[in-house]
Length: 193
Image (cartoon, rainbow, N blue to C red; front, side, top):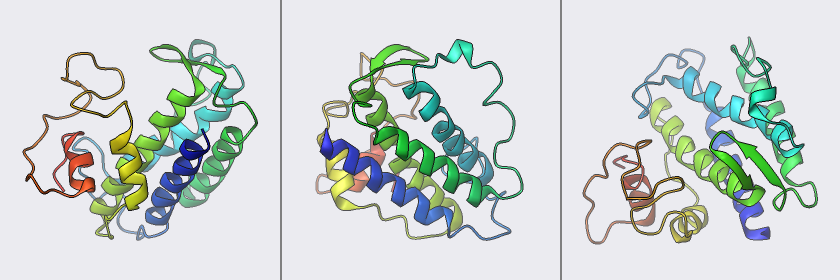
């Protein structure tokens, strides 16, 4: 599990780097996530981080009420991200966190599956954010290889799907036979590099 924890840290650093590159006038810029601008994308990732300590402490979504509703970014979105990311990372590094049962929206799962999903989401959305703000979209090659090699992404099936048709993603674009790992990873999410 150390490798997954390390890769989560790498994915978080990838997103964090892009967070610190957002210009003051870029919050309404479009991203590859067609329904989200930069603000919406960051809001999504911050909200995900806010849920982590709660869920790893045994919290249930149905019992959370409205504690994670609204606009968590406030007037200092970068600072809000930093605090939320720090607390989420601290929760993941707690001994045994990856072995605990976590109550997620689709049912109970082992913490390691939740951590994998969070790692994947941070990595892909780091690319989205980079593209949205015109920053370097190149992801850490070790992280890309790790995600591609995961049992959850082999073939055409990603977490939560059973027939190769993941409703969360657009259809996979064609990629060249000699495509690099990042291009392949993004294609599995319906993105073109």
